Image (cartoon, rainbow, N blue to C red):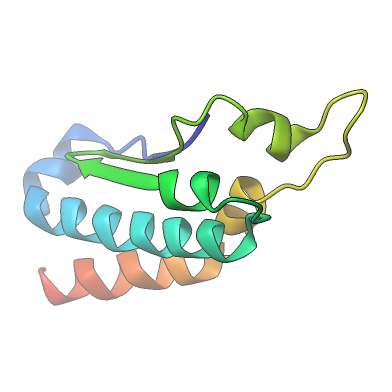
Length: 109
């Protein structure tokens, strides 16, 4: 299971803005979402919580878990109610992510 932050940025804009700045903003944003997901995830053994990771490079950041039952916790099943942690982690941080991009890009223009 993963949540992907993907920004469709015009090639002309990419050439004008330092790619390192975009990557830095993505990294900071992914860490925000990762930390929020870790705070929100229900904990039994701690395995799912500790499995939440992130990767950020170029124009994409991904927050994910490789634990097989992660999606079942997020979306629920017909025998278990949803205990969403990834989607709220992203949605609750939308404004902060925009602010991160604004600050990092302004600092690098």
